[in-house]
Length: 187
Length: 164
View 1 (cartoon, rainbow over the protein chains, first blue to last red):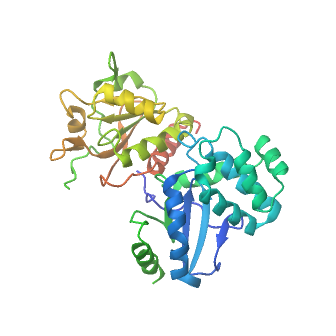
View 2: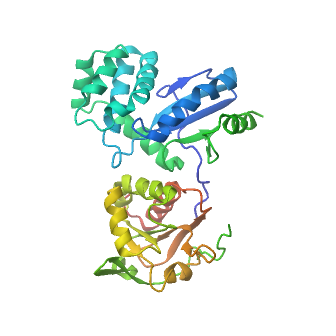
View 3: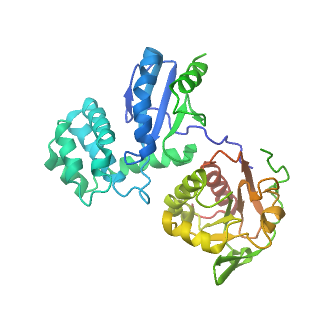
């Protein structure tokens, strides 16, 4: 009775998304990621090499998928990245995204937001504004919207990647395999 | 890696069963008559893909509850093992032990993997009258996510006129 194919992206890339690379690139890679997830941190180490290899042929999009039952600080990390983006712009978002992954062990088990706020400052934002935004859950709805678009598209854990709208179930830990799948989608 | 091929299809009455849900309690499928049930068969507690799959369902329980649906996880692990797994992963839904005779319920649903001695990674959405409305068998290494379940629940609501 269900005709929609599983593992198919249900939310097209729009201006609300965080994007790197040309908008008209033949390949769009979307990551649904959790900033507190160690596997996503590992992917964060692989992706720059993939992006270098793909060059202008690929656009990269990051969407939030915090699994809060196992990663209690993931939601605040995602909301903080959104707050930085609102204050500093997209460059600030990507700086914060990178800093959160690079310094993940310093804040993953923290009982408060102090370390996340320090990273927000490093990313060029006013930490007091970020703290107030976290307090008021200002960006919770945006993060949850990312999350639900992922659920409805067949995200099955973090990170989950979509290549031109299809869930990629292959091995993303190998740059060669990843690039081969991306190049296959290009043609 | 043989996949079971006889998974029960939509339109089939879901076979009733009674299984342990804790070391001293049992639950029956018929207990849930009147609302949808999601049956999620999975191979084993603690294997990494299962953990992700059950962790994901745990995170979106409220979405299932919007459809008044009950989620039941089932594997051949014992109720003691389930208790440890649920506690470790902070799972907030029941895990049923298809343990003795081993895999009997998985066999009746056509999703038992003989060579491995475990259930396959199979999903069923059963309506309030106990009829299977959607079923799906995923390759055992691939976590199927929740999109198919939510689509099936949407479809069920559209047929019954229930509020999503």
